[in-house]
Image (spheres, rainbow, N blue to C red):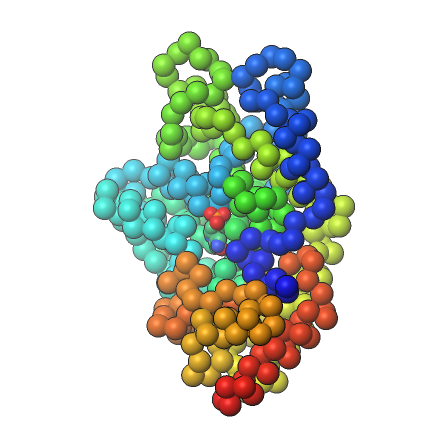
Length: 382
Ligand code: PMP
């Protein structure tokens, strides 16, 4: 199989990650933060060390301000529902994934007001548009770092420079950027950073996290046992316990730590260059096929390794099905959980076929992918 669905979750996982998860069952089998015997302490240490690794990766000063969640969506829900109050105003863009849009729409019913900044058809969002959307009641800018449909990279640092002086906090959804782009919460002015562990950080599914900036107090999404202050009926106010009730995903964290190790050993820059080269090659190949429409930034503009396209007059679902059945190429078709983006790029009724590349894809696979697209076009006589 050729796997071109890395924007959904990366596959395969590095061998180190597979081994780490398998051995975690034995090595870190205890419930962390509960017992004081050897294996429980060792398991707690694994979790602490993984927080430290993540903190180093994103230049976070206090590792305890990173909360483990089940995925990026849960992290975003914690940020939005924990932070926003009736009367607050939020700015977001028309590139947002439903992970941001749906919780915002739910919060709107509770008195939070919303302004959507319209992106250009190629995914560009002009910082001036963010500036124009600001109001006295604005408390949050919620924005994706990278569009999961077009691969467009948003200038989050510029956005932060505009809104933060007005005491507007910045929530960044790093679903498609963590592990691909350099992220520095201090330099880029990020107050809340939501990230999945299972995409560019190469951990398994079921793990993600939220960084909560200094001075931000969130309401927890859930209360319960934390292994700390157990005699009190109040949820502890110390971090990370305040937000991590219930038994934590130790296997996921063991895999995530190995994923970060893999990134460090290979080098994020090297992986980024590799994925960008594959993306460029693919875009150049598609540009030669007149029946293909590619969405997003111009072909030579730097973007994340996500390419959305359509074949003229064809249903993307049918093409994705043919790629799978005839060539064993895994792609994703449809709306990619981002209906606003499809309204932006002009594919609101059809969606797109999405090819997304990862560290393990090769140039050879790109060639096979391009040939497959051409063969399908021939077969369908388009
Ligand atoms: N935001 C964006 C931009 C995404 O691409 C995704 C994953 N498709 C998510 C949020 C949700 O991530 P998760 O599946 O880890 O909740």
